[in-house]
Image (cartoon, protein in one colour):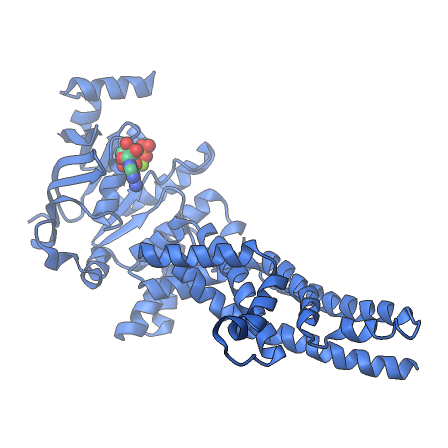
Length: 212
Length: 254
Ligand SMILES: Nc1ncnc2c1ncn2[C@@H]1O[C@H](COP(=O)(O)OP(=O)(O)OP(=O)(O)O)[C@@H](O)[C@H]1O
Ligand SMILES: [Mg+2]
């Protein structure tokens, strides 16, 4: 029985981890692009991006998953996206918006003086970005990023609304058979994974502790 | 011939005029001090010289060549300005050292990037030059320290070495000691004095009147965005001609 449950939870967990990893892989760079857009000197672009970010951050991710999965079909008669793809798309858009705000906070927290010191020394904009500001930004966004990644792990449970079989779905299926312990077992998976993430971010933070 | 010639510089922020008809010149190897009350435009003037602000009027010549002219857009492109600002160095009031680099790396970073772009010096040469500059600042034993491990006075001396590393024609200081505890100002003023002895061309915005009088060949008193009085340090500081200068100086002593 234990082996049985373990195997089926592992299968669900595979989906969870896949969604987690692919979301990060796509949303981290997309967030940076959105961030630059939201700080653009071109006002219309800035406003469009700020509105999109506001909509995405101001409404439930659950709703966004549903709309992206059912919307194209019901509104434009398009074929449904595969369930996992739709879920991933919603997650990438949602998290890219959150990440963009984290990046923006990090970039703006680096003092103008750092930028000017680079300019006065004859550095180009990109030299200043890569050699002076970037590492300072990374140092500052590590704590909020850590929180966001852990939230993402837990948010993956939402995709069950469009029947993507992630780990909780698997754990829940045992309730019908009168078993409650698989749910606690499911919890152990989350705790271990988030524990790993916490250790990783703690290590990163330590690594960049050599400067203030 | 003057190494620096500034003519009729104007600068506005929105509707407020911050600099008005600023003209002066500076000879090679001389030190110029700028004094004046808060808000008189001293920082803005240094920022204009370093192209952190763009003047709205006037022109700037270095070694007889016009490097900036408000009337001539050709002197104002991004690439042009980047090259021309290297005539000047700027030491900031609050140091602005790069926190993730050691003292030595702070000094060598920009010069290494420059060498990578245009060729020229080897990394080893730049490193040697950086070490020599830190030694000159009395910081040879602090080369491997990060800024947060240094006192304010040490950080400011690293910042001076960093500016010198780019071999500017004219080195500008914006109140280099006013962010420091009083007991740390001495060590920074000492290295600036030393630079003056070595005939480094400098413009120093300062509130240290005795220092300004001792170290400089010329003093400018600014008020409300204009140059009120300029001339020999003894004369401007000890025997000011203008009423406004006298008021400023007596307020500082009182
Ligand atoms: N970016 C800016 N936008 C608007 N006004 C500015 C800006 N920078 C400076 N000013 C104004 O310009 C005037 C001159 O400022 P500046 O900093 O050059 O004075 P300062 O002589 O350096 O003063 P302090 O001795 O306090 O450093 C001030 O009235 C200031 O409020
Ligand atoms: Mg100032």
